[in-house]
Length: 508
Image: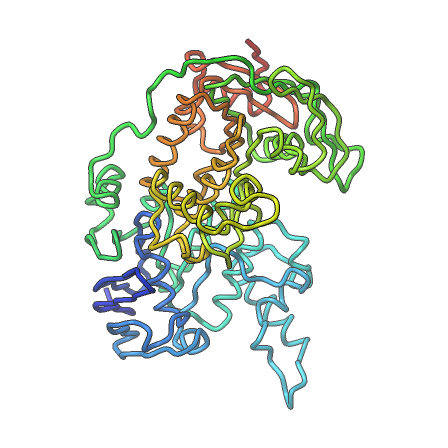
């Protein structure tokens, strides 16, 4: 196999953190090489070194592309060397068309005048070559997330990339969109494009990989043929220990009802007569984990946002906290009445990425910690240190910028922010999305511990094993309606999935 990339002894430091420590990695022509590791292991940092995001001089070691040592100062230089990277957060301009995005910054022109007919002609041909059923004149804002991901790939390959890096490309895709993506990747592989694939989804890793490299704590643990590994071996390499049953088995002692919701209905803010949540009622007790399951579009997140006072559309129903009917018209009302909400999009709704861990952790409880008139920085710092200690947040200090943390550590900061408000009820919407198996275990243990202390928890997750493994009781939604409710002992994957697809209506 002809090597198209070698990364030799790559090291990279940030203030107080050695992110990469002598990492080695290589890629062959037409090879699918997966790069795995816990959040904070150094995967994304290594790829930012490769792609010129971190310029030569800011790291140690050598990058060898097609046999030549390269020293990239910019992303453009890496692109010109045939390297394309697609990050987890899409970089498309949604107000522009597919074609305008594909050639953004490198439009064919003469004397500074863009040749638009050539832009659309070349885009059509590129989309056709990739078997992408997209109209180049469609605005990106009118495409689904899966189609936008495919536009990113077309954009990356528009300059004849021979090396494609995909960082968590399926995080927001449906099953059918994942299948479409993988068919395209198989075709690219057959054409000789080398691919570096970063994912926490080990099923996908083993489906496509020729080789797998594991990073841990900024070091290369090993590179093996995928055929010589299985998921348990990879997980053990990632976390440095054997991993058995990752879900806690403790039985929770349930108390009085903490939250009751009656006949809640929420309408689409853009289509006023369309119900996204339709007459849903449920309750959750102190010390209980109530799982809410359902397929995409079932209304799970909309349900939580409505209760929390954050839904833009019209809605109706009753919310009862500790036996008292409680009107909630805003998130401030919800917080004041003891509800915390770890949202599914931590970067958009959970954190201010440019601010410190301290500023984020104390954001929802400033009045309790600092008082109404004077900010008590010492108390804020002390509270943040305690959160970092109890949740095992890996960072040098409370003054670390949140945006520099790994996904798992960011999620712990969001969780810590709500725990500092001392909630009666905690909503967790996809609490482990985009984080590695080690961080997941820590989050699971914390959920179990919080329930043992008497906190009422409402858990939404798209991962069925997660719902089954953590919940005392499971409520299932389909197209906004309740189609099933199961105790822990009664819940099975088959029963929950049948209810989630609308095939069964089983209530206890």
